[in-house]
Image (tube, rainbow, N blue to C red; front, side, top):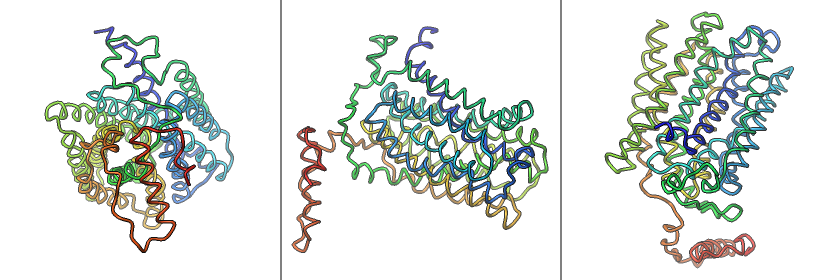
Length: 465
């Protein structure tokens, strides 16, 4: 039992769990810092300005979701995550050295640049190192560590601020992240069979190593069409996620006039519910798949049910000011929201196992776009109305919308080179009224599919233009 626990695949999963923990620690610590009087004396901000600082992280984060996943598919997770770790660690240290709103905004942008490709790249690593039967669990446990980072951050950052200042808190966590990047680069291998700690028994449980770094041709159009409903559903989830991550510490501090330590304690309790949701979501998803052999039941249906429960759980905060009841309602809502994360992140691996880095990057653009809009909208509503509970109505509505749209997702229909090859090359006849550009585009699309079917990679399609 002990030998199985310390097998190489579990060590790689442990490194990924630590990465998820650190990335969320580094991205959400700003929420607790901005609630501190020490920070506000140096850099005073309105609620709308604070929302803009929160969302600054999300602009490059959105930009590098798809491109970052594509880089992971081509370069491999080892190099991609090492570079990302160095960038986000440096950006975190940089935040501790800034003076003024502009430099704070820029540092948050750099942080988003460094973390933008991390989750799609980690998903690519999991598709190589995890058997299909453990993908839900792997996504659940890694995201549970990200929420553990959320739950510990308010208390940890408040403690560091009291001990060494708000600037020192950023420097400490940035240095820890830098050590992680070095450890990942030294230990991980893109091909599990190349790792000296792997046994033949472990390798046999894993999918075949199929990465052709520098050669992989992503079927952008069919993959994009398949991922559209997944992106929209994940946007609905992401709206609530980023609202909670950005504003929950300030919500308790301002709505209930608590000090920083007390508000951090309540925020930690809410975020810890997400740890349980992420963990159980992965376990339940895999158990459902084992029992029903249906990816639709284990992924899609589970997401729909938990989104509805999340919306219902948040209703009490509109009708009571009792801090204990509100904290319980927020915790229940966050638990249900996070229950969807593991099955959602397993869906890109189910739909596009060969292109899982790119597919998961596409999906996460939904959450990244929500990260741009949600914190700013929350701050604007509070500035204009003075009501801290009204912005949660948007979360309730979007969760119901996401539940309805989730039935357009089809994790049971994998998109592989085999399915692409089986698709007919000849499409509908080209219209007689088509112009030269239409003729060229149609010809290139058909030639690209023929090239994929024939497995000819010597001449890039773009050169045929």
